[in-house]
Length: 105
Image (cartoon, rainbow, N blue to C red; front, side, top):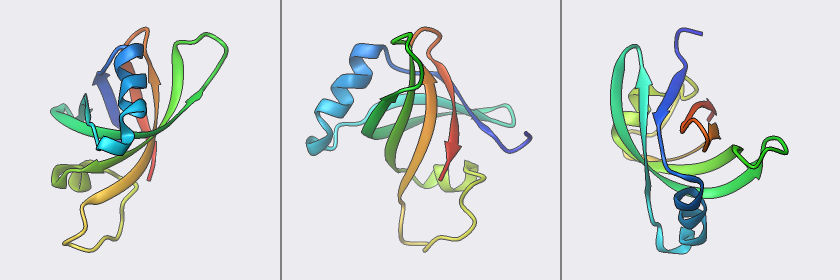
C-alpha cells in the first residue's frame, strides 16, 4: 500500500492511557509518523483505546488530530473544508514495538 501512513515511534502503554485519561484537557500524545520516507511528529488527542488482541500490547486507537500537515499525509481524506483541521481517525498501535499504522479516516 503506497499511501499508508506508518507510526514509527510512539508512547509507552502508560503514556498512551494517560492521554486517554486526560482527554477532557485535550492533552496531546506525540507520535512520529512516516509516509513516502518523510517523518513528522504528530500530536494526537486520544479518544478511545480498544484491545486488539489478548496480549495487552496491541491496541486500536481512536484519536483527533489538529494538525494541517496530516491533511496532506492522510490518504483517507479526500474532501475537507480548508478551515477545518480537527480530524478524527483510527490507528493500530503496538506498545511493545512502539510502531503501528493509521488505518482509516
